[in-house]
Image (cartoon, rainbow, N blue to C red; front, side, top):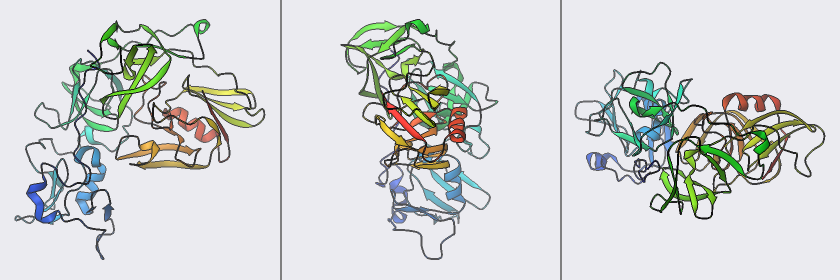
Length: 412
């Protein structure tokens, strides 16, 4: 049902130079080791690909989707027989004839020109409406508003989609998990608020929530495992453990264990427990500002001594990428961060821009930061690569309130 095995389309083997476009430009696909002497001041060497980006094509690639949409460069820029500057990427050919960069028609690249297209505005989206995907077999995120446009990814049931402001019509532009594109409006839904748990029933030792829609509970964390129960919207769930299982969606292999032989895909449940301060753990500071992060409850609290100032929901590390418990302090702060592949905060993306209000608390890259790809509907369950993800207003508060040296206590 809702967690069927339909993965996002791979963008192609990063840096190998062996995509479906490769044969078209083999004479220009030689690898380089950096920008040439005297090259454009904006030249950038992409080490993963062994090629450079520069000029109008480099600016276009950077602004309207970079590797997530076009893939990495497979060639250096070159002049074609008509005098246009051309560069080949894993998923597109870009050309500049002096009047602006366009996508060369390749059969797969049937998208409209990206400039001015609301689906390709620089990330993060500014406002917009959050929807959940309502398609049993997955919803195709496409490069343009047409079934003929190339598919960027296949979004599973209950994936969160942020529609661009003023979007309307049969096709809706927006963002999902850091990817930009268009989806068919008929498969988007705004679910009513989940029923909230009575504080008297709150068990702080487990994660309590509810189903976001029709969901299969399976005997193993896999879509091929036997179905042992079916959930409908609002059915309560108690998660005893978050485990790694089948990667139903690219970069998302997290499953919720409800008990022995009972698993549900993590994206199909939402938190319903109270948002309230937890009891300070043993050894927590008794004076001054400090930050408490509760991993089981997915809550963060700003404390002044033993007085709670603000408590909000967060998303911490998923199975295999757990946020490490311990006593830390803010080591470094970056107001507007760009996280590239290899960074804990970048998760499965090649690059994430506009990661605001980043406050690092370990020397391995764990940080508190705004995650623009999270939403009010889906924050509050594990899902990061170890960072503590916050919504915008909450990230801004902790940025203004904390500083270098502020203690951070991470505990179950």
